[in-house]
Image (cartoon, rainbow, N blue to C red):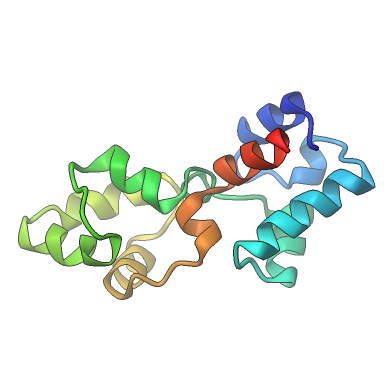
Amino acid sequence: MIAQEKIDKILQSPRTPLMRQVELTADERTELRDALIKKGMGASTLYQRINYIGFDTWEMQGINACIAEATSYSGDPTLFWPWMVENGQHTKFTHFMEQLGMSYKVTLRRFSEFDFKPWELEGITSILQKAGQK
């Protein structure tokens, strides 16, 4: 189980490699790795994010939370982007996502294709908090 104070410290610093933020035990690293791989994160992505890159704010929050924060949309997530375009809100949303670390072009492509892995939909915050409760 990852201690709550370590989880809190990780969540305070997006775009900072996890290993620079907290010292995780071997068991905690294994628990984190297993939780993220189970949610669809590739091993090489996990290694890069933990040791070198860190996570963007949108990755910490998760796509579902970003949608909920920025819009009133509550339907099928795969139909979110067509709904945004139809309601003229897509440009505003792409700017919102830019502030969270996803570029304009990537936002357009990823949301129009709704191309997200389970860990991106749920968010690192939720995954870490669940790992801390076990």
